Image (cartoon, helix red, strand yellow):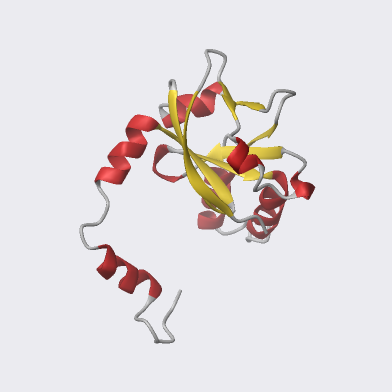
Length: 154
């Protein structure tokens, strides 16, 4: 499983292309073959997955019972806008216009990489989201991760 790490400020060109940072490229597993899937993420960002990670996650989503309404709704939200991408010869990704509009991305972009995906944010929305960061990170960490030494960890 891919484990990304890092935050990158980049610019998008007029055609909707971004140069994939060398620091992230080094973190790609060889089996990803520089192929990705991008879709709508949470909080109006885009989520970029290496193709191998997308296939793993997608197979989990596909186990949901489609006869349950909430499952169907989740599957529709999860897959909407999903688009396969590949790095071009100069290491750029062409982001779909419709997804750029959804995320409010115009020129200045932040790539926030963690776990198995890379979130693509408009710089403005990223800064707004960071500005609403919890005032008490320690309390949030305790609530989400459990108390140190306890068995109640997520």
